[in-house]
View 1: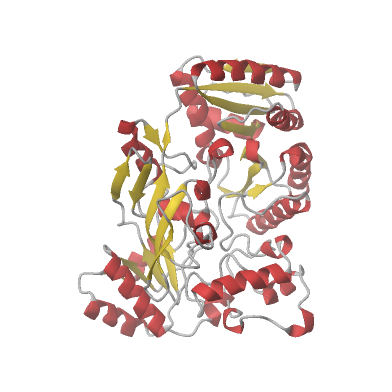
View 2: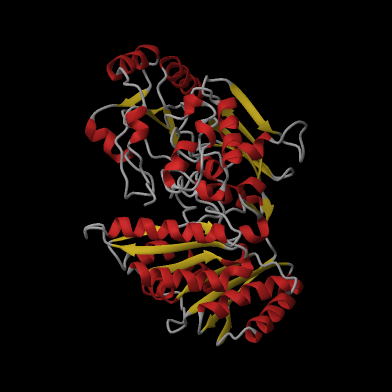
Length: 499
């Protein structure tokens, strides 16, 4: 079983004098909003991975950096764990709070500080919504490329913490490829700037190290992102297939033809029908799979690429290839894909959204294997994913009210992630590890690699107070999971082993 929430994390933490901490916060910062009543804390008990919930001890909502520094310093002094949280849209339990810890909510840091159209950059606070950056930059003909499906709500700080992607990351990259600089506070409240406004900066690339670190190394206070000019033209082709295997092979054929689409997305029949019922995007509901392929750039190149991709799709066995006739239809095609998650949510009381990445060449075989696992565990799986870069999002449908179904869904999800690793992929593409995939980290990495991860964590946070129990499993945990042998009982960084 892939344990999404491990009570041992809270159980191993020392008891905290909640009343004393609350009093100290009020004395030092009378205007700092601190939630401590049970009814106030309940809304913060989970992130987007809502099947598992923990009520935090305290929730603090700072308004300025001095307050954040003060909270961190006080918690460090009293050895109280701190979990940073943005918009709460994460899907891996990365912002799951602790019963004996403080939840530091950065949502009020929501200002766009400066847009430089000449340099094509934007300085923003971590609570700024992803989509708001593009909306603010639109007057300059610019936009921010990474576009997660939750972009209307997710915050840029959370995007950096999880190294979020989106439907256009095949061509334009993940968050890590679109961020120039991040200002952070360490666990002791020290200010650091990682990266620079230049294209390169001297020393180790700590910006890349920090991106995707899931709040375990520091708390983000400001982000400088790259902006791109809006493409002159963007066209979308929709291709229908009578099997998911053919659609999977077509993905590889497009890339092999030397074409890098702006976006290349795939949905299977279950996801197609759900999205069509919800959005009415004009999808062919009888198709076993569809591909959405967006080509962007200058008009002449886009026209030529559309013709080339159409030929590739037809040669790959597409039963229908349709080009969006206008901008309104292009938007509808994408609306169906971007709303696939809530659409599938209408089919079942609950669903478990997975996030793994595989080499493109393995798409047909992995999709077939997922279908076999779905039958074996008796749970339907809808496949929605960024096909171009092999980032899969199988949605496992279940009913948590039925005894054993949540555990079956959890186990099936773990098997899918281990399958991704087996074929040369990864257990995450953009959602992060959090609590959800911490056991599968034992399948992805060996003991030497995990020891190195713990060393990095200890360099930034020696006491292990920032977001403990997430992302990096202990070697003890991996030994219990059955994925690793701990030699001679020697475990590095014993202070971290309690997590």
